[in-house]
Image (cartoon, rainbow, N blue to C red; front, side, top):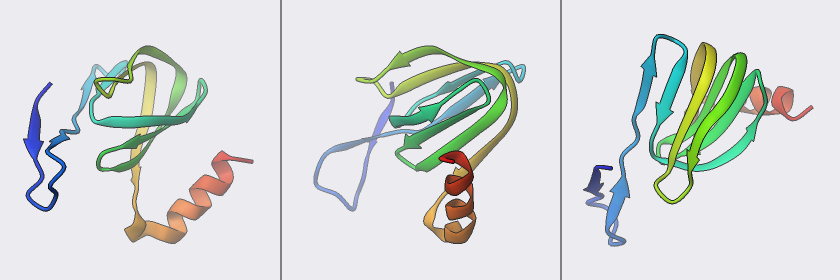
Length: 100
């Protein structure tokens, strides 16, 4: 797993964040801090670059390595959306739908 150093921090290496999709059926995601929630239609991941929502059909967690921050998801992927502070109202609406 590759790492780089954050010039603004003194804590050392910061994990890279990559999303690799293979054939719209398999996602490999690095830089995952935490899996917030998931079901067969939606995953919400906290990554080193913000929250990432993945929506699809028949989604399943294929692999989870918490120590390395790697998550693999299989199923039919419809969309990937980053929810960051710049889209505050949109993110609030999404979270309210997600946690009903």
